[in-house]
Image 1: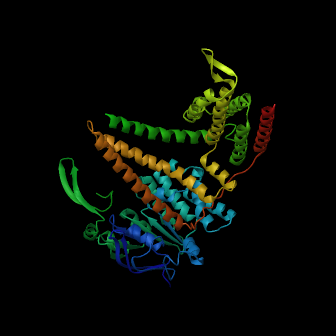
Image 2: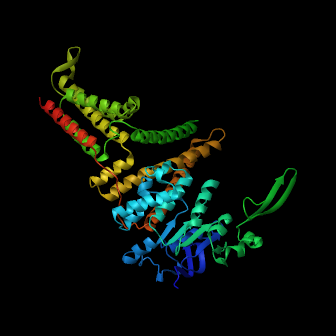
Length: 267
Length: 272
């Protein structure tokens, strides 16, 4: 069985020599649900952009569906359209993703660019908005949406492409508990058969709910762990070392003590 | 104190700008005569009215058009004070300043004399009046169109009129992100105020302003790169396509017929 994504010795350096990823090797098979964990600045967002063919490696290679992802391959030709149809990325900052005048324009943008028929575009948009419960926001401009609503619309704008692979960059960051719950519930229901999910997060609560594999990016911008969620989520020393949990002091009435935080509500 | 006044004025100006734009959007979505019309028919008929204003050479006709606009604003439930403030401020005043010399230099029959000498001629007053009224009328139609049409429908109408899609996309994104940048700038001003105690020198204020402008520019540049990537990710390849949901109803045809008749009558009166 071929891989959806494969990265070989993948490195990426930002202008000014700031490293984002170093010698990353990974392979993601169809149907996998991968959680990409790592501290701030470990390179999670960069890796997702590389997998989505939006930026290209400084060295090494990325393959998608068996073909190398390069600037040339994604410039023109049938592959770029096919690739964009099959892979969708939800950005961390919904303001970057919601550039259209209304929610309706946003959700129809992708299918229209991919030359779907107008009837098909309209039916996909309505179906996706119903699925996420945002039908009532249809005529709303983005600046009149709450953060939770923006995240849902950003998700809808990608789901209307009906992608086989969904890449999500910190989908629950900045959301209130109810909105976080909504996103997690949705991701637990998705993917259906044969769909692949790759999400970056620092929210360990959601990992064992939505993922069946964990990749951990260390602060050295390399993959330092790859396995099942249950293998890592109980290893507090490892999580502390990779800056995925923290340790700090607490006051309980008159007593001050210090302990590690794995899950926000466990205490 | 001067610097603080300058910052305070900026904060309130930014906040007012945001509130005003949001109020306009609310008006455009409220029930009313013009709000109920299709954006395309409104754009076409308002253009027709603006052309009529441009061709009009009679002060009573231009005055009549002014009354027509006020009646349309009233029937569309636009608060007249809000409307007049937008129409009468700045541009007509500047136009009046430009028109003032015409009062004195146009040769013709005497209208105002001082010490037996003609100061203002009838022809001069007429020329100045025509210029100011034309600007007021044209501007009124533009403002009325903006206040009674949600921005998104207006963009749809512009696309229908075959304006280049890139031009419409740039307009749309400018409007979309101006809110975000206004919000960012507003927050920076607030954060600065909350941490400022006492007076700062003019030089310090200018340095801070320079740094703020640089930060805003850097943020908007980063955001523009992210937006472009988000567009590419969803299949953008140089042309923004849109699925406009515009439909003509009976009332649109009635309005179109009324506008045609009204413009014809005004032009006929103009020739009398």
